Image (cartoon, rainbow, N blue to C red; front, top):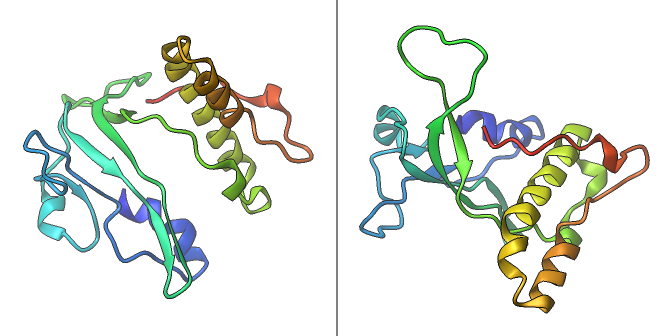
Length: 168
């Protein structure tokens, strides 16, 4: 999974020096194992994911002396819904625990593929759907969230192409 997260940067000859994710445990240790998504913490990668494990998902990129970007969410391992079942082991997936909109002004839409833009808009729709109703008593914050989660569009990308949110 770590290599899949890094692949877009690798195609451009870039990388990041931190792990893609780490365990988040009950002792509130920032990097609590035994699970991890990392090319540098090889021993942590020997622990298979189990349903209920909590970990971070934090790909990023840092240009030395210039800027840095890190997109971080916390997620929990869950049983994935699949059409078929092969063998005795369930397929696993992730469910996001933290739901915060990405900063729209920092998104360079022209660099995103259609699939990436659709993913971003579906993520924002999920944030709006899950968090919005909890903010009904605070209308200014609710209005901010609604604006922050509006679909990001470019020519040829229609909002009606958005699929239903699926966190599997």
